[in-house]
Length: 93
Image 1 (tube, rainbow, N blue to C red):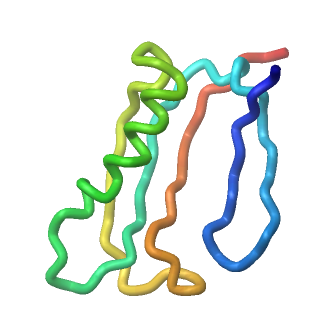
Image 2: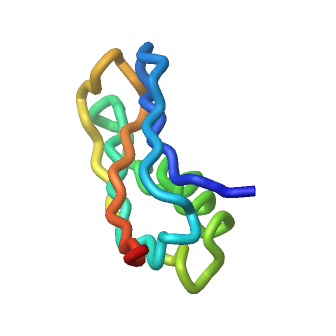
């Protein structure tokens, strides 16, 4: 069974984009979490913990351990709660 890295928008669009087979991911380099939050919300980093845990579990500690940053945003497209951007090192075929 082949596993693929997916991008699934959290808005009302039903499309998902397949990028690379998971075995080609050599390293999760960094993720950036943009958290839709009110001005006095101060724990953006805790919201991003779920994504960090997912990458760590999916790829293991050698590949899935990554740098990260999070920011609070006053509004995201379609009022989605979180947008996550990732930088991945990919093996050549």
